[in-house]
Length: 150
Image 1 (spheres, one colour):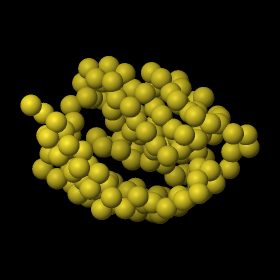
Image 2: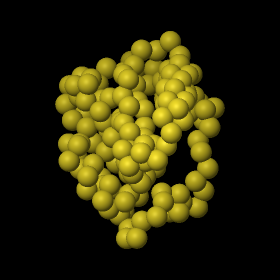
Image 3: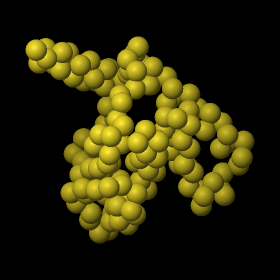
Image 4: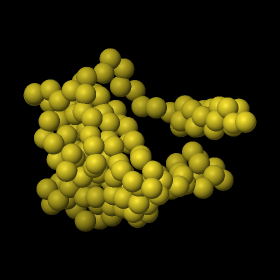
């Protein structure tokens, strides 16, 4: 139906919304916002959000079908005033890649096959990344940066 992002960003696919009862939409939106908030707390812990003002931000996703999640992330980042936003994906719908190119400063869509049916079809293993993997990778990244500092 759409996507949510930090800062109260809610993007809705109007054509899908017309076919979903309002009560179901409200429940789904409430659940998505709750999950976003829980994951941010889980992943970030006590650390504040990164300061991206004046910086180049590279947003990476496993692929773009509708592009809703990437557009929500772009909108959330724009509010933080980065110097530029670069979107990068290995696989994308040609139409979505073209549309997103108008919303970011630069885009890299490594492949835009025709016909495009779904992102997962282009992966041998498209299993979801677990919360534990994310936490380990984020924690490891923080530790490596601290060790590399003089």
